[in-house]
Image (tube, rainbow, N blue to C red):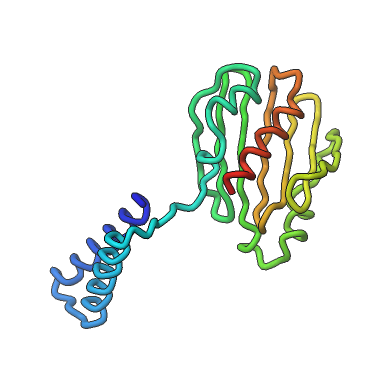
Length: 182
């Protein structure tokens, strides 16, 4: 709700600035009035304007610490244009969550998954059943991740230098919890 309000407030402020500068085009005034009316109608009707899921909202700091095997700092997120990533940094390890919207690439979701999720040299890969349409567990001596295609989105949860001896199970559990939020 706050994100929608801030976006609308920014748009309304921009339109007010145009009007104040003497660019009183009817189209700008109309857009301003429509935006204001729409906001009031949605706000008073109780319709929730949901903010899009960001990677940092999908995994808690506590869950990231469980994956890491030690304490981690709060997540630091970044929008990559076609997706969203969040890193939880520990003293020696990092837990990452990534969310990619496959619709932005103009290919089928399965094709994007096949292109984006490939083992690096030295990594093993294993299909995981029961998670999304397709899922793959990737592992090397220093990092492990699980990638899942679910409702045209690719979710990746991974850890580098984790101290958790049950890392694979922890990644799968975190992925199941995240899928429940999507």
